[in-house]
Image (cartoon, rainbow, N blue to C red; front, side, top):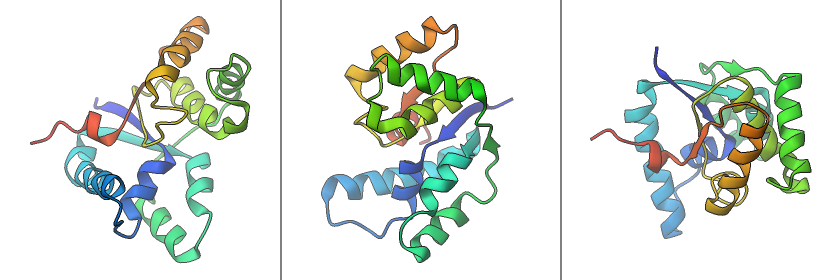
Length: 158
């Protein structure tokens, strides 16, 4: 059995976005494309209905492209368990009140026993200061926290 990865919406957005002139965004786009082409096949990848909802928003052409990129990826359940984990992340302050979707992404990956949560969200998910608090909350609830990382951190193909 392969290692499991939950792909959060920001990864899909970087994958399908028009090339950016911003150096950092451009690098993230290239890293995402390389991960998608070379590394993704080494993992059992998952999204969720929340990811589908988020990537459906905005320009219809761009949304269609994002949805097409994930059309063959199975969806992890958004269970009551996932919602309870997300709520505890909010109540504890590990994730801000105004970022309920970010907490739910973490809750979904956790409740489904997924080993990695892949994201470019460095504000509320893959943030050095927040990660410690997120892990602490999840472990207090007797779950194993998925490793919160970017495609660059999970990309080990050569």
